[in-house]
Image (cartoon, rainbow, N blue to C red; front, side):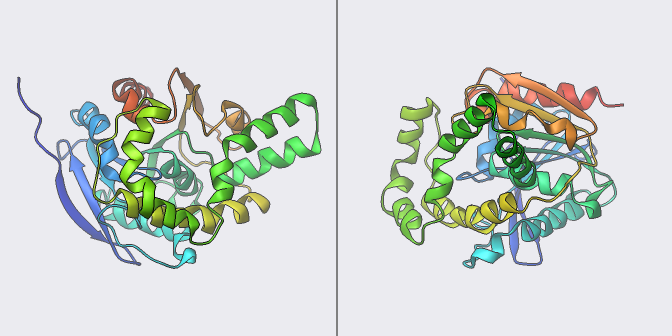
Length: 295
């Protein structure tokens, strides 16, 4: 059995600092950029990248605050505008002349909705696959619509998503989430994930720091965006992968996306939140089929 070659590592200079990159695949293939969520780093993409590397030049980067990338301490440094600067620096480095296929999960998906609805990036993204992470603006309108039309169904959906989002409220507290990550969660995260999600996660030295720094993603963006949502329209075809057993994102939260996405494909997966780790082959195949079917 042939062992696939390992990924290569490098850095890209973004306006705020250096971003760590991992790259798999064959140069000359269409470039695919993977954006990880919270509290992960780019290592979470290993299995998915191995399934996609024959067809794509696959790149993943550690989001600011995670892995080997730079780690700002100010909450404002984690705003979506700063994350967009990072993504722009990455794609300008790895694919300066051609648009990239963007694939994201969890908070990677939340921030990638900003990229695919940013007018300045129109033409730089060939397609976008989103899983388990809504646009904060779209979610804000979703909540507003249900409060304005308080039927039993709408209020039930709103209540269910509010329960699933319990951790977002906790992350607004000062210092306590960071203390929890550095005191307990960092060491026990793989065991907790096995118990709660039935998901195997490799222990990593940066886990406590990844969790502690990443809390600022929520503090910098969630409340401000959802309370004052902007009308944001996708400028690339979008594949929405809906994990039906997701403990954090209700399928109903993405029910109205046709309003914001002119070219939307919706596909349901019988999987939990960490589908990229639980079912990397099914996830990768869905992405491949979507991209290959594009005109």
